[in-house]
Length: 95
Image 1 (cartoon, rainbow, N blue to C red):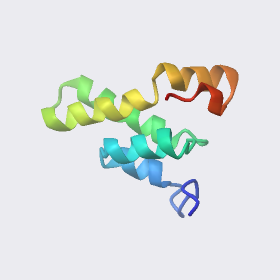
Image 2 (image 1 turned 90 degrees about the vertical axis):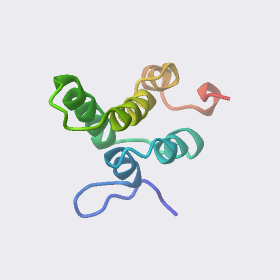
Image 3 (image 1 turned 180 degrees about the horizontal axis):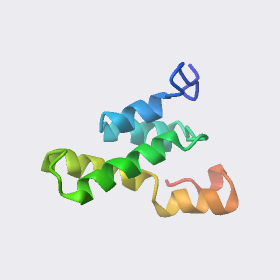
Image 4 (image 1 turned 45 degrees about the vertical axis):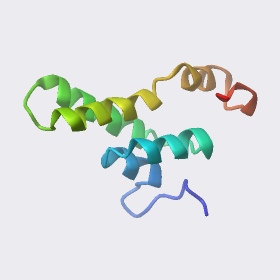
């Protein structure tokens, strides 16, 4: 199964896992299956949720905020930065 295929709304399984705050699913897709967020949709969505949480408007609960920050961290890890700088390579994958 190809986990990079977008639906008609240009969403992927990764962007859906981010939208629903499913950290374990997003982590599995990114770290185990090495699914890339080529269009940046999932990362942008993760950033949006953190921005909304930081406004303090109470749009999400504290528990949801914790999960959203965990999801966001998947796109801002040292391993992710190395991939962006050097290019995606299995030799730089976390063990």
